[in-house]
Image: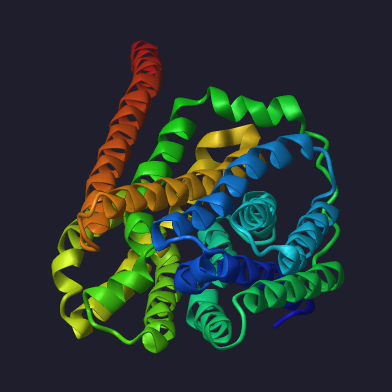
Length: 411
C-alpha cells in the first residue's frame, strides 16, 4: 500500500471511530430502557422518549450546522463537532431525572447528523468516483461495529454497574476521535464554492425531498420495532434480560454485513433500485416479526436480517442524496441523518402509542411494516419521475442528432 493510500485509509478509519461512538450512544438506550426507566422513575413507554430526544437533537442539529458552517474548513469542523459530542456525553453524569436526561440526550444528538454528513462528503472526496459508496459505507460501518461490540458491551456495563457509565465511556471515545482526526485527516480547506445559499439550493430539488421522505417513512418502521427490542425479546421470546447484549450483537453483525454489501449493491443493481428492493424486504420481515418473535431462534435470525437490510439502504440513500443535491451536498448528506433520526423519533413514538394502547409487543413491528410500504411507494415515485425527466431531457438531443444527420446526408 502506497503512503497516500495508507493515509487515506487511516483518515477514513478515524472518521469511522467517530461513527462507532455515535452508533454506540444511539442504540445503547434501547438496550438499557428498563434501567434508565427505573433510574429516572418513569415507565417503559415513557422511557422511549429518551430515544426520541436524541433523535430530535440530530434532526435539529444536522441542517443548522451544515448550513451555518458551510464555509468552515471541514477538518476543523469535524473536530469541533466531535468535541461537543464528547462534552455532552460527559455531562450525563449530572442527569438523573426525566427533564435532565431528556436535555442531555437532545444535546448529545446535535452533532450526529452533521458529523456523518460532512464526514461522508470528505470520505467520498478522498477516493475515486466508483468507490464513493464504499467510502461512505466505511464511515457508516462504525455504526455496525458499534452494534456488534459497543452496544452489547455498553449494555452489559449499564446493567451491572450504572446506566450512566456507557454514556461517559462514549464521551471519552469521542475525545479520542478528536485526536485521531487531528493526526490522520488531511487538511480540508473550503473549495471556495461552498456557501449558505449554495447549500440551501438543495432544498429546491424535488428528488432531494423524495429521498429524505424515503428515509423518514422507510426507516421509521424499523425503529418502531427496534426501539422496544429489549421488552419485546423478554416478553414474546422469553429471553432472559442478561442475554439481551447477544441479541444486540446479532443486530450489529447484520449491520456490518449490510454496510459491506452496500457498495456491491450500488455497482450491480444501481442506487435507487437497491433502495427499493431492500425496503420491500424490510416491509415483509416487519409484518412477520411479531409472529416470529414468539420463537427465540427465529426472533434472533429476524433481528440479524433487520440489521442487515437497513444497513444496505443507508449508504445507498446517502449516495443518492449527494447525487441529486448537486451544489448542496453537505446539507443533503447531513439531512440524511436528520431524516433517519426523524424516523427514529417517529418509530419510537408510534411504538409507545400502540404499547400504551395495550396492543402488545407484536404491534410496533406491524406499524413498522406499514411505514416501510410507504417508503417503497415514495422510492418508486422518485424512480418514475427521474425516468420521465431523463426522457424529456434527451428528446431534444435526439431531435438535434436527427437534424444533423439529415443535413449531413443531403450534403
